[in-house]
Image (cartoon, rainbow, N blue to C red; front, side):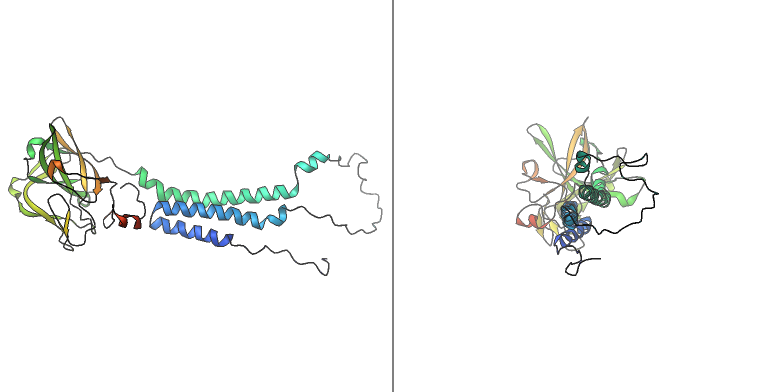
Length: 314
């Protein structure tokens, strides 16, 4: 029985559980908003979880004060052998053996180790499912748009193709291609993505579209349709762009996304998409600052860009 003035052992008040809960909340929010937020939440949860476990087990790790045991007279039955006597007696432990494995050290290590294992079991799969698919499921886009003769200098051509034939029409993409002529003896092309950077609606060319001149080329069956373009417009919310993709009216937050290109054996190949904030000058002389391909509605330059989380490559 405890003495009259002895208080029961209870863990001291601590803020570590609050920090641990904040970390878990950040992980859940990060799964929806951005993987860096989830990673920060995991770090916070692990740090505060470790401190919480360390705080709770502090009394176990403290040296135990010696207490005089209660003694009672026990009748000598003669059944059990006395210590250090007889074949059944336990051998004495040395001072080194006693000091090497104290009970408090074992309990502390076991508790911290179990907490680390539980934390790893929870956080590693969450981070894996949230982060890895964004990097491992990236496709190397390389689409043949046909011979350079299909693109008259200074004229836009509407190119449409399927990213995945097995999935079908839902993967159809449209780009607007313009041959800018030569720049330092090298062909120059402007390739604009048709996705509006407001909410992702399909942008339409403002001008004439010569459907009767449409042709299909390449293994991916790319449709090429010449067009006389004076600008581009979004039918959903009225966004307007000039022939360089710069926003001229409406709610879009930046210029139209662009695509890289390469020329192989006299044929034009479409490369990866990227985002731009604003385009200066025109045609082959256009000055562009490239950014990672961002989702619609996201600023990529200026002070507004700091209001958006870091995005994975897309």
